[in-house]
Image (cartoon, rainbow, N blue to C red; front, side):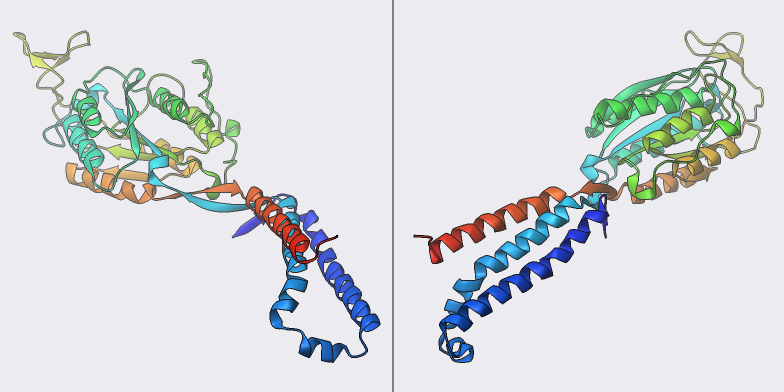
Length: 355
């Protein structure tokens, strides 16, 4: 389907029938003056002679139409190849991901699903890895090297808090680093409060989304950094879709985030310790995750088991199919018009020399 940026200029196409009528009138008058019977001349004239006489003008008319169409600045929706897309896997590594309600624990189950995803034979796009807890970090810039992606995912470790908004902003920056058309994220003040009135409607139609997506996986609610919906608004403004995954169950479970010490406490180096044997319960903030997906044009998934998470990642492949993007094609019509004009001129000079 084709659309036009300057459709009013297409009215000039109405001049083409006038040009054709003028040409026919001139030809008829010339033959009428020279010959008493135009019908006899037509019958006596070989077919190739008729072609030689009129082909330059036919090419001229087609060229004129192409140039007028180019002036209207036609645009069309084209599919981008998979290799032109970027996926940012944004993974929650907060301490609640150590919970064992999903064996062996949430983090290992998420790692397994993410590694299976990057190993999928149908996924040939570049993938980046962002990990977030109290802050967000790009642990692997977008790449098609499966070994680098596997190592980055396998080496993820946990930390305190959950900064979902920071994760979205860092993911946008990762996309901006590989696509100069995407503006980097803007800093959101820690004092900024969320109000639904601050959110504008998506400025992009489905055909205008950029060919990059963010896959955000978390098992809890944001409790640090900028508000996630304020961060998601920046994704809306850049046409970046966010697919959210709420991972975990509502069951209380043991949380094991490190090695066992003499006092029966689990601890990771440099992080706050948690006593063993305790029962903890966290669940994803589905309302926020759904709103992030809805406002950015993505989709929300819930996964309460490793198998469900594997299925979610498999379904994500369908969103990495060729992405439609609007492209102006006036240059092609202008080029065709120029070529036809030159051809018409050369044929006219060859078959009907001025001297």
